[in-house]
Image (cartoon, rainbow, N blue to C red; front, side, top):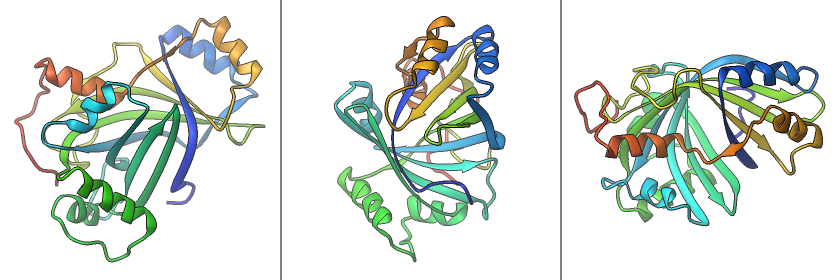
Amino acid sequence: MAGYKDVFERIEVKYLLDDMQYVALRKRLEGMARVDSYGKTAILNIYFDTPDFALIENSLDKPIYKEKLRLRSYGVATDDTNSFIEIKKKYKGVVYKRRISMPYSEAIDYLVKGKELENQSQISTEIDYMRKHYGELVPAMAISYDRIAMEGINDPDLRITFDTNIRWRTDKLSLKEGNVGKDILEPGQHLMELKIAGAMSVELARILDELNIRKTSFSKYGRGYIDYKSGNEPRFVAMSTAV
């Protein structure tokens, strides 16, 4: 899929906005950032974890280093849809993401059914190492949402995303299901992520301050897992595998 990078290193800062802040911010961003060529996109993910959720449990403890493994598609998947297997690591506040792409059915064969990849690479070797290191990584939770992504007009390193309809489920773990599950955000909330290579610009920092938009700690998988642990199950009959 043209336009999608395979390797990232950046700082990601998250903010929770209400409707009024969102509308005001979009207005203030005119001339600084524009919606990218993909427009509004449904992003679907399956997070892989140990059977006892060791990866997300560790992540919620806020260690210096943490990592996650997920399978992602942009839009509802079919067997032939291009999908991405991603390792996302965070070390001392810096996010590192490495991923490989392949048809969705091949990704399931590899991650769930244990079939070896025909095309090996340095990134696939890292994915294999991570899976072996944790002993067993299985489909654990689906996280899906609708995203509007913006890119800097004069700053090519600036990227801002707005996510709504963020949902989780622990059954029907397939990217063919679409954005269904239990809502994570409250009505009217928007999760903004600021993705930058270095320091935020003075102008953008001033805008956020004037609109009283404050950074927050927010993990979509983490929020879904906390909800799951509390017994707030989504509305499907549990299944243990992805398809």
